[in-house]
Length: 162
Image (tube, rainbow, N blue to C red):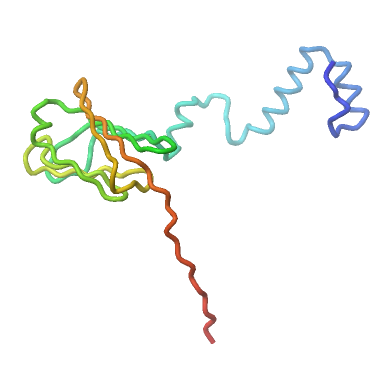
């Protein structure tokens, strides 16, 4: 039997719950949950619809801001130690033209799909200068960038104006 005496219910509530049938307990819990979550979680809301409002990663983009009207497909996701960017290359010829570089918060792509095109992909956190690797397999270029710990902070003194 469940140790109901460990909960901060009064004796009257404890006795009512002990004497309830399983169907009544289920109805009681559904009723309470419906009252608690009704304003923000309607019964007809699809979980996928609810998740689309979160601004997080993995992030997938098909229309990368670029010079020109070119588009590339990519996805970005992060682990505890690394950020991974996967780019779908339409042609292996792109590899010969591609120039990759990155700043502390952007991955920069040049010369794909056409010579002179430039793309920038925002990264979800700061990255290290060294240690980036790139592998190509099955028309997918996977770039692994080690994350950097942001320990650069400055104390700001506040002065009172008279």
